[in-house]
Length: 234
Image (cartoon, rainbow, N blue to C red; front, side, top):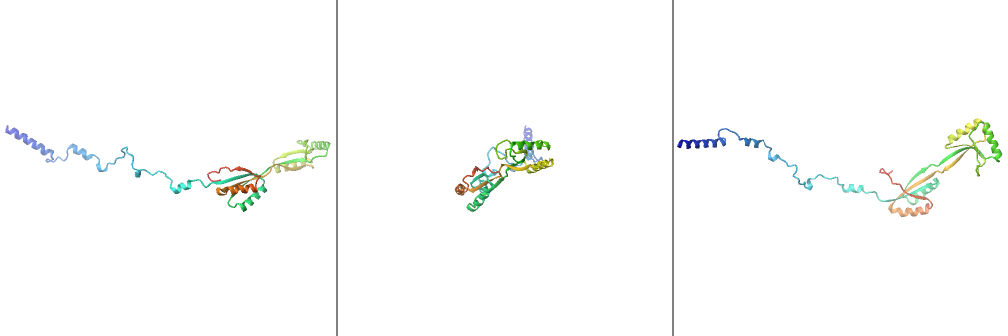
């Protein structure tokens, strides 16, 4: 019995020594797995569903004070457009404006007039004379003509063609001369005269002064609202 107790005590003692590593065993299996884990001091929490503090948030595109100031629209101005002015009248207003209101900007646009060029034989004295002249044209090989019947300065004239350019009318007249027509002429007929447009821009502080000046300098001028400019200011 004593031997059995002694052997049991010895076995417990050996087992205790073995678990403490006294027999050369380096680490237990659990200790080995713990060694393979990531180092706790290097672990970083990516997100824990809590918003970061204001100081850690990325900066938004907030305009700086100077940027806000530059983004504000330019100071208000008064713009008046004077349309369909005769060129001479536009010249007069531009000269008077530079003397009376030097702070007002002026921008001028010219629109050329339109005209036609009439090849014709001037009015004849009587209807019989006009008909005789028409007979002569037919004998010369002229096919396109007619006698003007309407009352007015050109009644009993013989029209030989209406052209949109001076060069075309001159060429038609030369062709008639080659056929023997000597009495034909070219007359310029103005359809729409040339006009000019003035765009006047003044600071809002001078708006009342500009209106008063226009009432005196151009009381009959046609005024329109200025068109909006594009982003480039044109």
